[in-house]
Picture 1 (cartoon, rainbow, N blue to C red):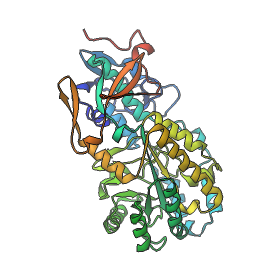
Picture 2: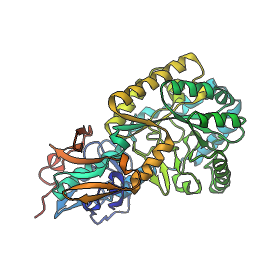
Picture 3: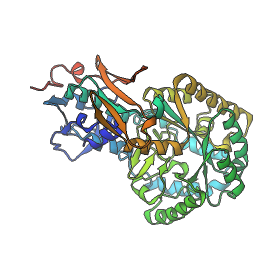
Picture 4: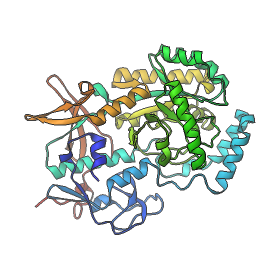
Amino acid sequence: MNELFVEYYRCPEEFASFASSEISSDRTGYFRFGGDITCYGRYSRAASKPAPLHRLADALAETTVRNGTVDLPFNPREVACNLQNELYVQNWRSGPFSVLSDLYYFVRPVLSVTIRKQLQKFHLRKWTRILFPQWPIDCSVDNLHEQLLLLSLKASQAERIPFIWFWPEGASACAVMTHDVETREGSDFCPALIDIDDSFGIKASFQIIPEDRYLVRSDLLQLIRSRGFEIAVHDLNHDGHLFKNREQFLARAQQINSYGREYGSEGFRAAVLYRKQVWFDALKFSYDMSVPNVAHLDPQRGGCCTVMPYFIGDLVEIPVTAVQDYTLFNILNDYTIDIWKQQTDIILQKHGCMNFIVHPDYVTQPREQTVYKQLLSHLCHLRAERNVWITTPGAVNRWWRQRAAMKLIRSGQGWKLEGSGSERARIAYATQKDGRLIVSFEDSSESIHFETDTETVDAASLNPAAAIHGGD
């Protein structure tokens, strides 16, 4: 149960000493873990709830620290995997929804954007009532790990815990721009969009639909590559049926993999962000970008509740962490970057990955282009003033794999890094002050501090009478 914590922070295993009390209940449900951390899994007290209500049992009040070990009333690996793989969501392709979805995608090619927009607004009309995941960004998985890191500091009685920082060269966070090309009009606009991105010094990934939607021109693929942009495969034909049943999915996955080899693509994204993570092993790509952080405004509800990349088997998942341009303009009727700025602020606090989808199909007009350029300008500001690493999904995938293979080795009184790419990595040190997590870099010339803005606190301050006991 310690593996996911070590994988998240890339810290030495000696600092991960978690044990789980005997979980007497097989019932899976919701509970919290101090502060604003919603969990979904089995809970030893059998006090979990079937829905993410406001008043949930707090597992932190039943957590103990004894003899260097943190004893938890749940399995944190199970909880994190349940959230990342969206196992809390009911079957999304069953009953009336499946019939309506099939009908919608059958007639979608002849529907105008205006009609589609009205149908989508009707389907999403109750989205503001959804309690979980938390809009506009849900950091439950990240907050869970921060709380575990605080508990590890207490259990180990270490002054600080070293770990491999999330991004190269000590970047405070990461940002990637992606363009899903859905129509012939969007395909035709790609060269102009490349020029816009390049004018801000930002490279992006173009997700190409291989069949039916438009002619995939070799000259466009060559232009994208020659300008330093990336190509990923976007579904097979964008008909919304990729995950309809296992047999059809496997047949289509073979075709999708073939196109991936033809295009030289390492990445994949499913149409409309439809997904079923337990089937992802049939996709022979290095990374995927089909899982949203929070999906209140998507046809398939749910969300992975993290702003960090993570592994699904051998696949690196780079979650979509920002609202899509189509949703912003056509569902929310918002032509500002206010929501994007709100999301980037939260992601920056968690030092995560800002993953945007902006379609060339929906920024062909001056009004939408103006908003998009404002977003690019904001990202440039974050790059210059906040040390955000703006890169491509392929570079994030390669870095995340390198980081996962690196090791922290004791060297005298300190630590050193080993592994490919370690020359770009930084060692971070976690400490706590007044129940809050403080992370800093140290070397011979600088000390850079990052303070988390989460509500995680030391359990003893929540419930001094029963929460956490020191080792005897």
